[in-house]
Image 1 (cartoon, rainbow, N blue to C red):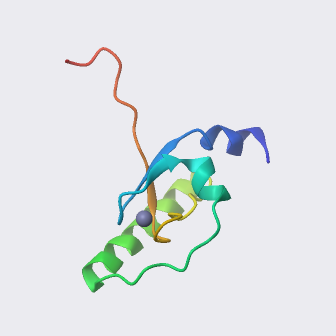
Image 2 (cartoon, rainbow, N blue to C red):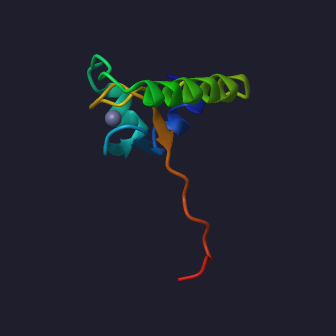
Length: 86
Ligand SMILES: [Zn+2]
C-alpha cells in the first residue's frame, strides 16, 4: 500500500445504514459481507453515495470500503473544528 492510501486508514468512518463506526482500516480489513436488503428509498440514497464516491475518486480519494456489518456505504466522520464553542 502506498503512503497516500495509508493516510486514509486512520480516518474514522460511520455507516449510512446501521450504527457501525470505526476506522477505515477496520472496515477494509474486515471480511466482505453480502449487502443487507434495503427499502427502495434507502437504496436510492446508497446510489447517491456511490456517485459521491466516484466524484471523490476523481480528486484522488481512494474508494471507501463497505460497512463490515451491513455491506453498505461508509462516510468519513469529519473532525470538529478546534476552538469551537463549548
Ligand atoms: Zn452498516
